[in-house]
Length: 509
Image 1: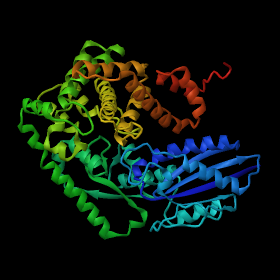
Image 2 (image 1 turned 90 degrees about the horizontal axis):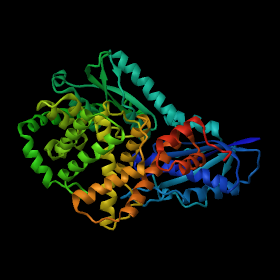
Image 3 (image 1 turned 90 degrees about the vertical axis):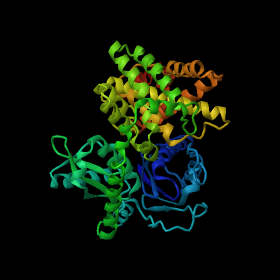
Image 4 (image 1 turned 45 degrees about the vertical axis):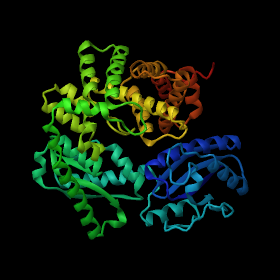
């Protein structure tokens, strides 16, 4: 006998870009509590939409009283910790919960003794049974399954793109943002002045995607079109005034930024180089100039491990040297989302080869776990070096300023996901511990710093591995198997990932 359980957590005040962090922590907490309670289960799934997290699974061949289930849910929630700095209320998921409700088949669970309720405008729908509740949410334009929200948005978007003679290219990370922020993400087509197509395509695309958060349309030959798709809640699709204001905001921002970018080309690189020596970034040690020197050295070290040729090492070294200068330009200071793109355009204008220029633009990729990869080996090596250095610098800064590294930032979490994706997709057999050692040595060598390297190394390693577990388990849902493989391959995440993919767990040992 199997019995379906559905638990809903009403959420308010937690930023939407942290829902996946909370859900990953919640997933592990649920799984562990189920095993602690010796509850046999299957098909554990956690979905989320705006203001809701829904936990769904099946009991197997056992009967449990409803009081035990309520206690199980309460104890599970209390264990969920969100390891992000600067959260509005606290780092406990429980402090963002408006209500808890649930059913086992058609039997309601009583969570009235849990003190989560707050005055709120978030709509509440009473759960009676799993089927009717899904239907009621759907009737109110709420699809709680992430996969179905994504399918809805993509189906409607592709249809709109075809109607305008275009198509959508790779913007997975932006679509993931939409399905986290909206109950039912609905696409609308907007357009901009065709004259803006005379500006560099790379710049226009970056402004549309990274700043305006809209999906550009392309012809079947890859040419940018004067159309884009933006996202609204489906309930707003008849609100013409809202859509008019939304379009104006997007188009004004596009024109405003494009009017500034050419000022970058009016200065010689020596001016930017001097600025780099004076420029420090928040919550980091050293200057941009110091970072460029480390990236040059670390990129060559990684190139040696990967056995790349001398030409590639020369390209990556030159790209590393100039990869950060655009962070000193006014346009990137005002709009950090354009970093890399401005450097790319400047590098092209000054006559650098396409490999170097493209690496400057693409080394920030992948920005998110769903982002695309740099297209060249030079860009990939520089990307790995940059992300590892950012994480190392952040841990050093935290240590020197007595700031606990238990509370991370969304930014360094993205860097860790980027490292993981680079290693796995490129099938790089790299030793994580050795890379961390190499990077820490460069801080001591070039920065005349005295560091507790063993402690720092342990913290950096544990952080990257914990993020690896978090990202990989999304597809495999088995922490036990993953942890066993990590125990056998602690420094080679590629080998661990491949054995997990193959189902090779060596359980007989």
